[in-house]
Length: 121
Image (cartoon, rainbow, N blue to C red; front, side, top):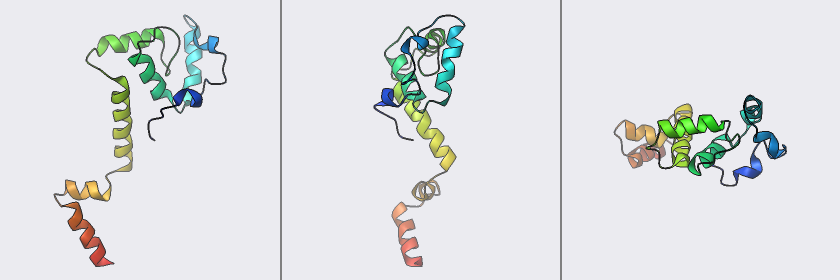
């Protein structure tokens, strides 16, 4: 799934009362439930971390959880790049290598593999 640039318009919270996501204490756990099925949860979280958004539930995380992530990973310069890369790696692992990637992993030049495929047709 590619990274979604216009993620706010696709968020599971787009039809919710915005005030419901800017709550405190135990109510934050309830607010996070909206994010569980959100198709743009990673984009939302990356935005909140990259812009150091202090208040509200963003990307399924509370203010405290985001502060902890920022504190534990000060070396991260771009959360978007990190999360986008993690998503891509996950999808690659799930789908397995493409024929071209598989050939390169076996030490074959992709053009040689393609020539073999064309010769076998």
